[in-house]
Length: 222
Image (cartoon, rainbow, N blue to C red; front, side):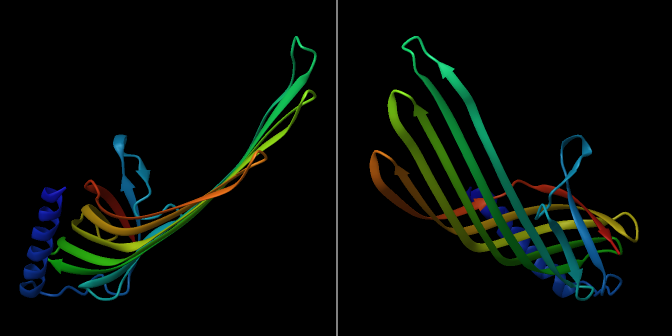
């Protein structure tokens, strides 16, 4: 962990020095870009967000980057009725509903080294919210109705710092290698309610400092 943090600090300080000495480039000023992560077997995936991951170049040496994640999952599972040797039947039903949304916004400082290579570094807020609701029910002709409900809510807020290098292999496309470090405050609330007990609520508070593996990305400018 500390080696990764030290690497991030060195890259950040080096980028600041380069940005002071390098000449400004205005070729990207006013342009938008969509970003994709390059995964194994050269498949493209999410870079900062599954819904959108892009940036706007305010000038040749600065940009604003935004990533938005949103997922929703709903499902029902039933095993139907089962007859037992004792003469009664039972049925089970499970319902799951999961939703989550996350937003990352960063201000980037870009430090041109050559016409087609530049360092960049940036920092910005990172927000996340998730909700999970699960219902489980079991009934039989010879026993009372039993149900189980669980609700989980989680919230996170913090900052994401990034540093990397970008290589423009054409006027409208570039490849980048980026490293990230996130500091987050996390809050989780779990509520459990059953037909045989009163509702129980558990709250969890935590802080986390997490480093990401180096990510490779593709940017398309327009």
